[in-house]
Length: 130
Image (cartoon, rainbow, N blue to C red; front, side, top):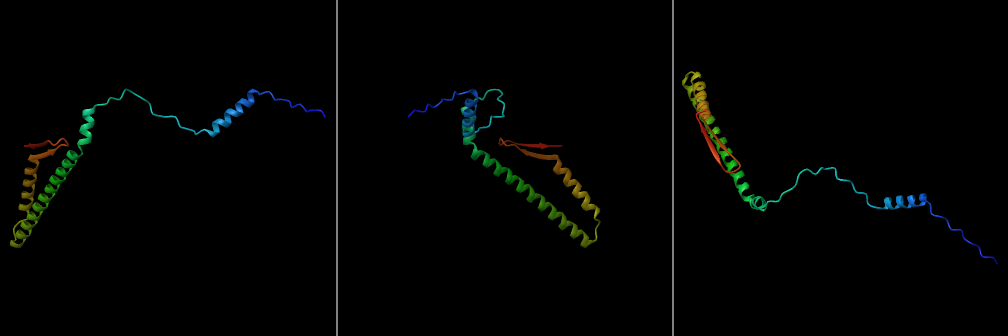
């Protein structure tokens, strides 16, 4: 009985490439980052502490701002209610409606003279005489 000899295949470049392709298919594909890196990042511990501990401050400033806005709305509603009351009273007496318009214009001018601004840092500025 004659023993059969097996012929060994020589590994060619094609075989190596196919193995690489198979390995690449089994690997997890990851996307390359598309963001560009510009400059350097600096770390300031004081700013970090201010940010972390500043939640309460910022929340309180939002509350104050909301309270001032609410007060302004109430004031405006009261002013309009007074004007309506005056207008109906004058109509009942039979007086002219022109006086109402003049009073409204005067009140608007007075409101424009005083302007109040509140900033996020907690500073409020009052500007008078515009």
